[in-house]
View 1 (spheres, one colour):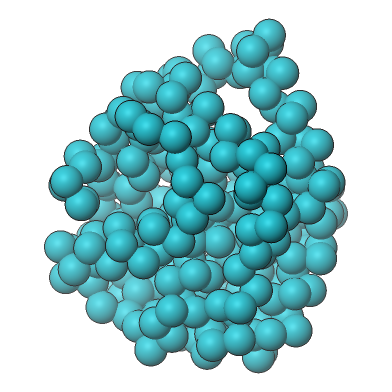
View 2 (tube, rainbow, N blue to C red):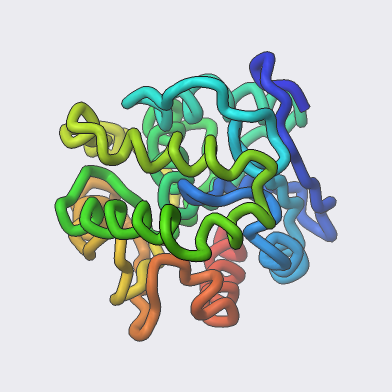
Length: 248
């Protein structure tokens, strides 16, 4: 798929018995392949169609050729995602975002509240915390001196550009004022937030900010769970997603 003028990797799971599509938006270091079998499990559990894609610079998508800008998630939410939905003739999707993907989902739903059927948010970010930045510094050291680069290269054709694109902008001083709380006030669709108590990139302050501004937000806070509930506790996360989607 080419959106806009960039070649992107995409995977589609056809619906079983529901005329609804769940669009899955990966984390900052994620890709289509890094979801592993979870998209298929979501499709089977919900009966919905599932669309997964690797953002520009990730997975098998086109190599990132420039520095990320502070508003890269806004661009994804307001330019790229609408084009992907239009090309695939998807209306009123359920957006399922993880980490950066959850932030993108919030920006999109806050911009066009009437276009989104529901939100499933794993470990969302709505502002920058020093707590999370410390982990972002630590993972750079792991990438430079550990085996993280080798692991990510299994899932990304251009791992170095992908990693630097994400890590550099999050640690850029200009990014420290990044905040998307203004988008929360206009969101009207049902929302489920799933967060691990041991999330190394964000505290429960993000969940609380969403609860204060998005009426009727449901939350699932998981003990002994880190930044990726669908990997750390997949069965629990999947059951919550299945029940939430059934209400829509």
